[in-house]
Each structure stands twice: as C-alpha cells, then as structure tokens.
Length: 176
Ligand SMILES: [Zn+2]
Image (cartoon, rainbow, N blue to C red):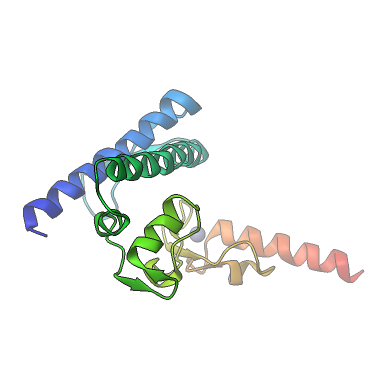
C-alpha cells in the first residue's frame, strides 16, 4: 500500500472517530469538551464529558458496521466476486488454522464466528488515569486486588489509594 493510501485511511479513521463522538452527542446526550494534550502547550484534543456515552455510541456504530460488512460482502457476491475476493479485501491471511481465506470470510461475516486468534491483535486495554495522569494497563475485572486489576498508577494516585483502602476495608469485613 502506498503512503498516500495509508494517509487516506488514517484520515478516514480519524473522521470515523469524530463521527462516534457526534453520535454520543446526538443520541446519548454527551457534550464535546477540549482536553489539553500533556506536554504540548496550547494543543488540545476533543473528548466527551461522559465516557460512557462514547462507549454506547461506539457500540451503536459497531453494530451498524457489522451489518454493513455483511451487506457489502453479499453485494460483492452478487457482482460475481468470490468469498476469497472478500477475504482479500478484508486482509485476512491466506490460511488460518480453521481453513482457507474464503472459509474464514464466510465464518466471520455469515456465521458470525469471531476471527481466528492468530488474525486478531493481542488483548490490551490501556487508558490514561485522569487523577494521576499515568498510563494504566487494565487487566479486566477478574482479580480482586486493585493492584492486579490496574497496573501503572502513580504511587500516590488518590484514586488508586482510595481503591486500595476500600479493598482493605472489605477484606477486614470478611475476616470478622
Ligand atoms: Zn491514577
């Protein structure tokens, strides 16, 4: 892919992120606010005052997108394209442990089975703590100890300190 194609894709991806924010504003009553970018004086980025509205908007767009994937694949089939052509357009690998690229495209779009693990990026969930400004790796809601759930807060982060205190109180309660 050429540099121009890549930059066009980046522009389109950026416009899509903007669109998700607009959906949050129009459908979920969020407001856009400007947040300063750390380390860049005078620069800011547009964010939502309610992150959960952004989450719901992204879910809505994802649902619509899943429908669009299927619809355009079926239109491609109607126009004489093969399931392998569909897989090529989706940049699926020629082979996965499940079978051919054509089969993988069918399984994903029509059977709604998730793509084989090898074709998905490794799981990672990182966000910026608005209390201590540190980048935090979110290990999911599985562990009970706050330090196992969220790694990366500053040592004196008030939010993580409060979570640790609440955890110790709960531990104390169950010990009684
Ligand atoms: Zn923090």
